[in-house]
Amino acid sequence: MRKKVILITGANGEVGHGLVSRLYESGERSILTLDIKPLDDALSDKVQAHVVGDILDTALLQRMMSEYEINAVFHLAALLSTRAEFTPEAAHRVNVEGTLNLLHLAVEQSRWLGYRVTFIFPSSIAVYGIPSLAIKNSIPPVKEDEYCQPTTMYGCNKLYCEHLGRYYSAYYRRLAASPEPFTLDFRAIRFPGLISAVTVPSGGTSDYAPEMLHSAAQGQPYNAFVDEDTRIPFMVMPDATKALLLLAAAPAENLTRSIYNVTSFAPSAGEIADIVRRALPDADISFDPESKRKDIVDSWPAQMDDTAARRDWGWLPDYGLTSAFDDYLIPAIRQRYEMA
Image (cartoon, rainbow, N blue to C red; front, side):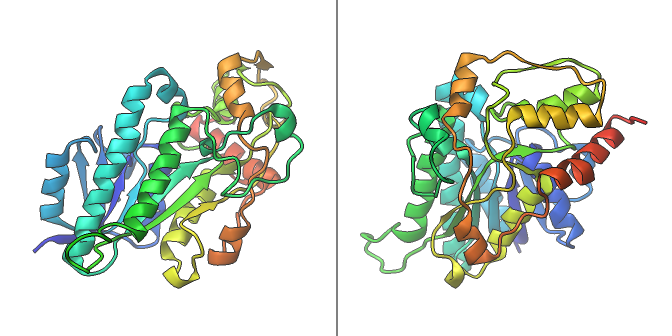
C-alpha cells in the first residue's frame, strides 16, 4: 500500500525550513521532502522520508508516485532571482520544466486518488515590472493583475508557472475524449522579500535586508547594492509559512482567484539599516548601489495590495516592522550567533 504524504520540494531552502518545522509542530508526521542535497540535520527528524534528487528527473518522480500517495504538494524548489540572471537557461529548466513535472505528478495523483490534489506554489514580487522609478513612487499598492511585465528570468518563470498552474487547475483535458477532468487544485502566493533569522540568504535579489542583519551579527561589514531610499515590501519567515498553510487549508469555495498577494511591512533600505544599527551598534552598513540588481529591485512595487487574501482566506500577518525585528529577528539572530 502506498504511504500517504505531503510532498515538499526544495525543503533545504529558507521557506522549506520554516514550513517543515511548522507542519511538524502542528502534529503532521507524513511529510516527504525532495531536494538536490541531503536534508539539513535540523529537519531530518521531522519528516517521514527524504529523497535526494532533481525535480527534472522524471524517472525519479515516477518512482515516488508509485511508492507514495501524495495528497498535497508544496513546490518550493527554484533557482532564485540573482542566480537566475547569471544562468537564465538553467533557471528556465529548473523553474519552468521542473514545475511542469510537478504539476504533471499532481494531476496524475488526482486521477489515482479521485479528488483534486492541492498544489501550493510560492510565487514572487518578481512577477511585477514597474516601468520607471517615478511611476513606482506615484502608484498605490499594486494588485495581482497590474504591472505583470517582469524584467528578470526568475520573474518570467514565476509568472509563466502561475499560468501553467491555472491551466492545469481549470482547463486541462477539456478536449480529451474522456469527459473526466483530471485536474488539480492550484493555489499560488506572491511573496514580497522574505527575511529569516534561521537560514542564511541564498541568491534572492531582495536579500539585501537579511544580509544586513546576518553580516552585522557576524561582525562583518556589509555594502548594500541598493540606495538608502529603495523600498519594497517584506515579510518574516514565520508569516510566510503561516500564509502557505492558511491558503492550503482554505475551502475552495471561498477562493475568488488562484494567485494571491501577501505582504506585511515596506521599509526603505535605509530604515532597515537604522534598525539593525540600533540593535547591533557595531554594525558596519554602507550603500554602494549596483546598477543591475538595483534596477531589478526598482522595478518591483513599493507596496503590494493583499486585500483579496485578507478577504478570501483570512490572511493577516503576525509581525509588523517593529515586532518583526524586536520580537523575532533580533532575538533569533542573537541566539543563532550566540551573541550576548
